[in-house]
Image (cartoon, rainbow, N blue to C red; front, side, top):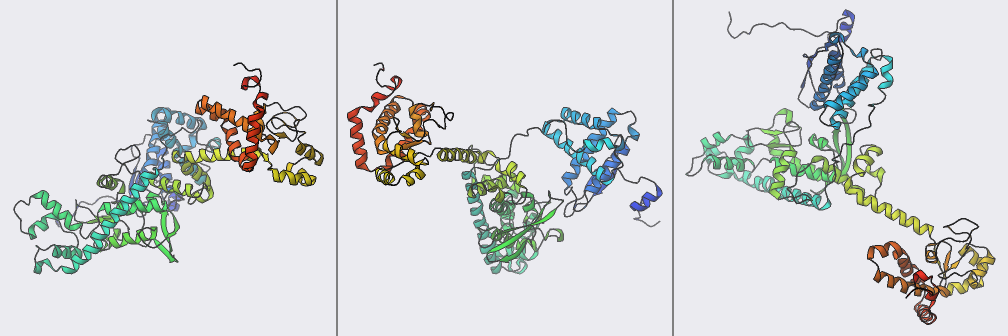
Length: 620
């Protein structure tokens, strides 16, 4: 017998789907591997299902949804749907008596309602239960769309909505970083990038050019070792120790530090790429997972200082290819950052495996002798921990900053929203307006902006509604000579304009265009509000005749301001005082104001005030 031969095993070959249909056999497996483009394959294993026919249908649906261009585009999503299939199997196995023959054709709307209740009772949080229910509905809807005759007609209507209960409030909404934290993070990234360029470009080029083959020039020179790393790639610590003479006091720890120092002299570290990665997202608002999958040829169509970034968005229609037009130039532009990443990884890329050569993010890891990178190895979230410690970054509470990648995109969106003054159509780039409003505009960081906008809108509406008419003496004289112009400007009949300018329609603080058509009351009835509301009324007309009363009332307000708490005064009289100081008094020249002030002091107009406000009859 020939040695080395392994015992033969029986192999089962799957028939094509059309042949399987002809034979009438169900050959859908319960265990298989799902291949994801540019991702490691993942195992779907439902062989321990208690409802094998149901599990077989769900497994086939998962495999169909994991095809290129479909809904499932990552190994993690595959396993999430597998877990949902297991939950469905456990639920129906305990509920029905014929679990071995149970299929999706036997599921009723009442079963789905009970499954929803079961999820909320068994899952650790309502959020997890709702997510499981949503994915279960997605599986059943996929079966309905592909094989509508499989499900019962009554179930079709139930699949039109997710659940009977309202969507639970998830809480812990992802918020943007405060401006000071975001700026500190940007500055740390820029500082780290400058240091990386100095080390990997300027100094590395000089050292490699000055080095030679260490087999002839010796391993004792720093430049020779860098020359070897540049030509032949990384070497292990054991190999480095064998070539160089062990010096006194050079223990394993110092050799490990020297080993890292030498390799970081020509190859980028994960922190170097993390700085570029974080700054790129803060500059463009690119999705973190899309930025992680950028390739070396992601820059397209450079022209006039702009370039397009081609990226893949996994969550849209199953890995849809998109392009984003950004500025291109120095390291402060998105295009310049990507070109800088290509420059810093140029030496490392020459020693990578074929499967990682197209990845933008590749680096040398100290735990191995290979160049790593791409989606499978580059983990900026973990590298950011060391990055924040190195640059001593803190969050808004003074604690050590923890970089959450989702908050980076929220930070860019929040800053863009502020710059564009809340233009929602501009914010909705890469998603719908509904998503932009719910996930990027309605966040705690933008709440003061929204509250200020509401306050400004109300103030503007109030200013538009209260069109207080202030007529200076010169303009009053002109209107007396032109009754038609006075009627147009005062928005009254010509006869009423003449009477108003003559003082026949005067009240205590102002003249009134129509005392029986008040915006505060009913048309045809007398104005129901007190006299101090005249300054907030659109019927009020202020002329020089009313200045003594206005000035006297202002003095009264100042007395009240000194006697009342600041908040109480602002609530009761703050707007009226502000209107007198900003709208009425500046409209009159100083000589007119001086005469009115003298008249107010001589005639004591405050005696006409009601007793409660200090007029005649008030208690001393």
